[in-house]
Image (cartoon, rainbow, N blue to C red):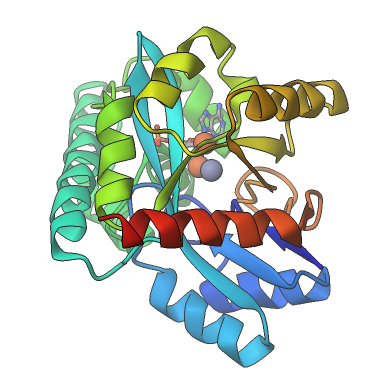
Length: 276
Ligand code: AMP
Ligand code: FE
Ligand code: FE
Ligand code: ZN
């Protein structure tokens, strides 16, 4: 039995609906999945329902953007109570930051004489956690850019004219936020961060695990992080980070996590909740 614990839908920057995502998971013979949309759990209820209908186990989750010693890192929260009022109030702040960032990016585009309407971005995004991919899609849809790549290259990439930096909480705040919502906190795709030196401080802050298996991790990298997980007594997770069609081809099915790790993750979250 296998699971994919890193997946996005159109409730953040993916393209699949929850139902399409679950159909794909089923087609790849997965026994369970976690939804980890950026800064939101909006897609969790529908994904849970689709999983129940398809006989898959569903793990509620989210992916938070944070910062540790100047390095951008992503924290995955799993087995969260997605109805916890304090948690929902906290992440709604990050959603507001995202919405205001879209307004700021569009204002910069308008200053550059690119006549994009902010309403068209929000209508297309149709979720609480919009981001640059939605601005890029709206630019293409309005005929103002020929492709998503062009939109990023000309305007949206870091340090391009319509790029706006994103607010980032500290890694410790992200870990505490996940723990306070009854979940386990995992460092996402550490191989992409090139900042292993920040891991010990995060372990001190309560980090529960490392995403050792990820589409962009080589076999050597996965082994390296398995070793680190062992050394720091951390959980091991993995997932494809599939965004549907938004980054070329769908990645679901390319990373299959053995189910023992899902059981260990659930046990840790249960223990954390019991100790709350
Ligand atoms: P945001 O969270 O709003 O900063 O947007 C990040 C998203 O934009 C991620 O899903 C990235 O994969 C996507 N993205 C970043 N750079 C590019 C690029 N050059 N081309 C296409 N998508 C990109
Ligand atoms: Fe993403
Ligand atoms: Fe990420
Ligand atoms: Zn992701």
